[in-house]
Amino acid sequence: MKPSMMFATFSFLILLAGSSYAGQAGQEFQPQVGQEGKDVIWVPTPQALVDKMLDMAKVTAKDYVIDLGSGDGRTVITAAKRGSKALGIEYNPEMVELSKRNAAKEGVSDKASFVKADLFESDFSQAQVITMFLLPDINIRLRPKILDLKPGTRIVSNSFTMGDWSADETANVKDGCASYCTAHLWIVPAKVQGSWQTSQGELTLKQNYQTVTGTLKSSPIANGKLSGDQISFSAGGVEYSGRVNGNSIEGVVKGGGSWKATRAGK
View (tube, rainbow, N blue to C red):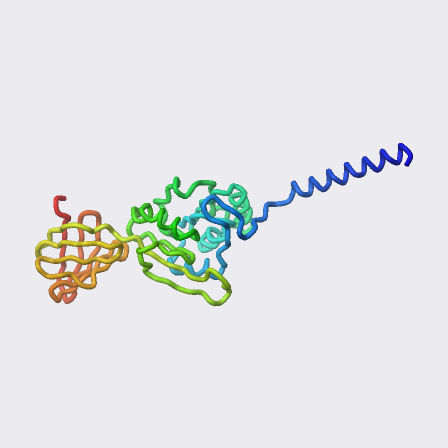
């Protein structure tokens, strides 16, 4: 081969390699199902279940939604399309950038935002709704932090539970969902454990998440439950319902009348 032909061939190979590298460098990141993450592998939530999860949480434009481990951003973007402000917390920076691009494509960048952060170091106390698709042990590690959220905060998990904290509602999706098709909803309960003073006598409450037992004066409490800051129970054949506001409860008695309680020592 003549030197001029060798030089031309070598130059062509360099150009070809450079073109190939530039094409690879210009390619947008595409996640792979099963790719490793900090705490979990990435498996996308089916869109049909995303819709169901947000329906169960009764998401409206007034809600601030935070998705823990937001992946490609689909839950945050769907919430934003419903008019909500929504934030995705994701540890993988490439997934964060992908989510931002996806939000821009869907025209919701003004409502959907994403941050690269560790779930266990993040503040999500301002959320009205939290969504997640993590793992049972991660859910349980997050549970104390979740239980400290404002009463009434709605928590929705794809497939995995919160250990012995029973869900307030569970639903399965069949259409448009082949795997991971179960959603669990919890409503963060107010904290009522302890002694309360009422005009009917001392109210002693024992709390196990959203279930309440105890006594009112000498009568045992039956059917005691909490839904956010709403409490209801019966004692001595009388049904009580009310709203918990920190160290006080105010409510009504079925059949007429009202009742109040103040936490002992407050």
